[in-house]
Length: 487
Image (tube, rainbow, N blue to C red; front, side, top):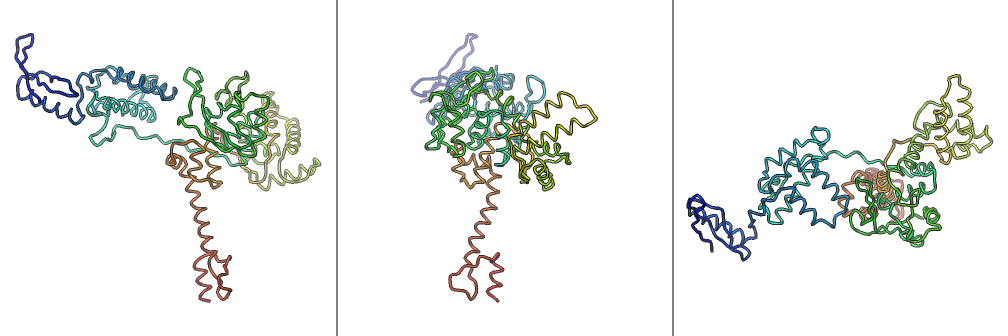
């Protein structure tokens, strides 16, 4: 039961402190000059203890920076890259405003003002919305943890209802890039090495993240069951260190290995031990994303993405990114002149004719062509010499390695895969994440679903006067069916 005690300080002034018990320990309030105020505070504290709401005032005296260190030590199960990103955000954006401030002195107004005006440490200008949002979410999580640890009674970054009004608006993400099957094949064919071709196709047809595909070992691929076991991933820290650990969601999964890739993957694994990496760098170590992107992936994408334009330039046609009937006609004429079957499709043999004609045309021009331009043109035509272009092919803008993962989702959804199947393939934590990420693709499928449902319903219409139960495949609408019935 709460009570008070009279206390005299060093200056001889008399006051009162409230005494109460929480968690079996006798505790004291701060000093009051009025006895009833001390008793009221003691009773409030004791009541809070009975409802597990009591907070030790001394626990809130630690600074935000000290609490961040304690908090991170309890998160050892998190991915190293996650912890590193948190430390960077705290050091550059949170610490300058709140690092030296005790937890209990952080106010809602301070958090709101800081979230709206925080500046970048490098430029001194207001940080980007994405950076401000990430930093604000970090501070909210940090203060939530302080509440859970009973260092704060409430989170000053939240309203009484639990909302975070100071959180900056989520930035608009750039639109996803998707390749069609034909464009994907074009990129793969433009690759300079078998490893690059296999890696590009495996990523774009399974949706593996870069850290996952670069960590695959020979034993992770089962060609008989046509399965790829995703059990680990590489994480790159800011200092360039590669760490081998769990996948992003800390979960293992199996993804289907397309039959068209079985032979290519088997050739990639030939001569390697089960524990060896499936894809390696030039020195046999892990394949690094930056190096692969610069030396292998980007050149293939740039060549494949402007293949139609290059073909039209080589044939001395108006510049465009579409393989139309005019291009097909000129290709057929070139094939006939070169002794090839006039198919209108620019295959590797046709590219050889196109390259020879392009060189002859450039040599015959009066304007001088620099050596650098000749080398660049030759490399581009060499990269395209293994590709095949047909009528309807279109050029495409450049894309990133992660866009291959988006491509896998797009191709799977267009192929009729369910949300659950796409979720399992991509390793998303829930179907909700899959839907929110690729909602636009599933909306396209709604049109196809509507057509399917309509066709199935219309197929049940009966021809008037025909044998009972006979369907009318040519009826295209309910209105038409009614017209038949009236007639």
